[in-house]
Image (cartoon, rainbow, N blue to C red):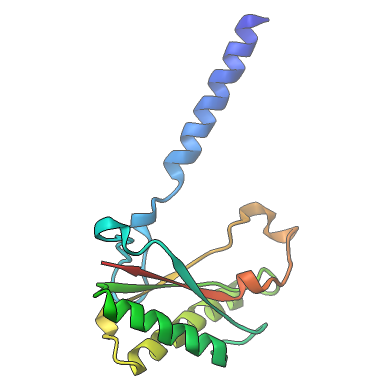
Length: 157
């Protein structure tokens, strides 16, 4: 009985290690626009907060409150001399997966254009497509949550 428990514990540990080994590190986020997000919070961890722009269902149009948030983040990035603005586009779990991926990229691109219009250099903007966190549960969890219809903004040195 003791040996069986030990064998089960060892198997569980092996699975856990395998899962952790396949989980990408934050510093390895791949960009489709402008390079890689370095995810470097800077000296004294100056950039530890994420900021969000939310979108209506099936829309990539930036709403007035989203534009205000972009202007606020631009002010922070300029004032704190950020090296990058990383944008993580996302869409809801409803609908076609490929169409959702395009919509997420379009949302992030529109936010990038808004930063460029404020004078932030394109070379310092990184867009990272952010997939759904539910993995194989995607088919069962098809809610249309506002938290999924967003672009997450992160500053980096």
